[in-house]
Length: 639
Image (cartoon, rainbow, N blue to C red; front, side, top):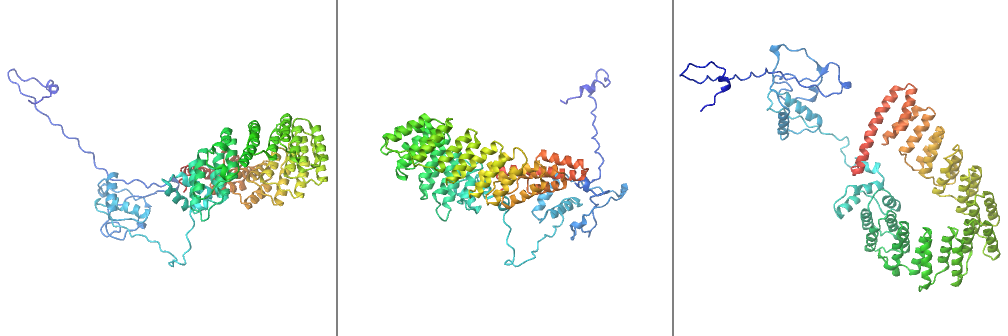
């Protein structure tokens, strides 16, 4: 039975009684389709500031036969030039095209890829426009002629060599080696292949120390690097080179990787020595694992072969020295008392280490106890023992008693020595009596006891701490006159306090005299000088020191550029500051927001709005590149 529309039938008039007929069916007329609209191509995606006025790309009507774009040959990208917008067509002149959806265009392009290939991005764009503008969408346009680059020098012999890779120019050798481990090559062979591809000699002490001591290499990665460096070396490395890796593992507390590193050394015919044992003991004691360092003599945990590598007495002396140097005097004293019953006898060096350890704490009673033990074992105290006694008395506040011990030592024929004078000078420095320390310093020079580097460094630091800058500079001149050249760390320790108070003249004098004497200046010292001079507005001196720093081989980093820009802003040289900022951006360093805000304020104060706006755009772009570069380096993509 058919289903009737009862709702509609209820509204119709009822038929007469006795005859019933269903209501007539009505058909709904289909909706009329919307009128066809002409295709209007979208405007070209050109930025507004570069868009020509009243000009836009429009798809022309279907060309006639023979036209370059109408199915014939000879079409070129030059035909797609912007033309003025033509006047609107009359309704009878409008051309209606079949609408081509995005999906249809994509399918046609994929279909056409099997027949035509474009050699450049411009050719692909031209082919796509021709395909979409054709009258018949299914009919493909002709393939453009491929473009081939013609070499100006066809002779392969005379061709210049290819430039080096970008990573060789931008990255240091240590970064290139560490970057290989960021990519996590699968397997030992792939890792060795990737490390060999860098073309570096990892057994160079400078490169190896820079790789394993800095960065975030794990213990297993460090061992793999050592394995590759030894297996790919033309000559077997020395034990000293391998000790660099062992020391780095110990400092970073990768003790579980020390034994695999020693196994790699033995496998390649390199056997540990006493220095390797001292390094392992010292790192264990520094990591507060004293019990493991003591048990190392008995258990031989790392397989050093103490009975074969070195004598047991030498190993015990090395352990005692490490314990006292790290201020574990209680454990060391107990070991010395227990070791008196060992087969080997304790020598004078072990007792002197014990006396020196207790002298650093001013424990005169402990020192006298071991002095008596030393006499019981038949050992006579020497000049080193007397110097430790003088030091202990001075640290205990018994300076006059220390002077009497010094005079008695001279009468017994043990001196005077430089070490004994140093003990007296250091005692008076610790008490704050600088005048008396200078008196004994002059006595040292008169008695033909030449002061050493420790003497000068201790006295200069004491004068700088008391802010007696003139005496410190005079002492520094005497130091250079005696031929005692300070090392890099000592010079930095002299410059650092001078850059915390007063004008930078004294720090600049120490820098100039040290550089003239041939000493090496550290990068930290250069940064301290640049920061202090820039704060005082010495822009000319800042630029001179910056040039000397670059001559010394130190590269400029973000902090140095900020110091220089800050100094130039303080004296109003904003144009030079802008040039420095642009140079830093070219080298990949984006300045901090504080320094940039200061420079921007100076530019706006001088009504240089255009320069400030141009610089802001460069800074924004530079920050984007810096963030991308940091992300790429973190993932190892820079290789």
